[in-house]
Amino acid sequence: EGPREDVGVAAVQQEPMEVEDDDAEPPPPRTKPRQFPRPGKRPAPGAISSVCVVGGGPAGLGCCRRLTDAGLQVTLVQESRGLGGKMCTKFVNGPDDPSLHFDMGVQFLRPSGPIAELLEGVVKPWPAAGRYKLIRCSGDWSAWSIRGVTDLPTDGLVVGVPSMSKIGRHLAAQCEGLKVVIDRTAAVRGQDLATGRWEVEWKRE
Image (cartoon, rainbow, N blue to C red; front, side, top):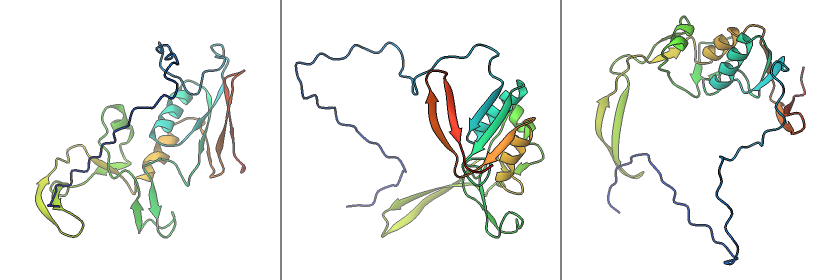
């Protein structure tokens, strides 16, 4: 097999489903998109005073901000070591020693609008011009070569300081009255279809 260019794209083709009973009538066409989980009883407006948000990544923290701004009591449950989701950092010698750490997920961001203003003071421009490159290679694992290197634009790119995990903690601090529970035992038990409420449990206080 000759050399190929590794483009990093994969496609999966799904074979048609076989139907054993040829005489069976096809189901009627769906008029509404499938909802999962199926919605339960919707509470009356103003009946909700407290909310539990599961997941302390960017989306969960954004929900917490909107909910706390609306005056609700919000508990955020995060099943990991800290907040931020993919904006996470591994401190080799523990969080009290930031001299050696690695950003394990998102390497940089390009924020704009209100979120860019909100992150002032906890991010800085990175990488420098000329340090962000597209490298094209060809060949296979036994013999490959670099075919070309192109500089990519870095305008607007930022990184969290002193690490990416700082961004998650900063966003949580903007949520007034937010209760944060970081517990690896946390789990979603399910939804009560009679009330529409979800049950979330964790072992530690």
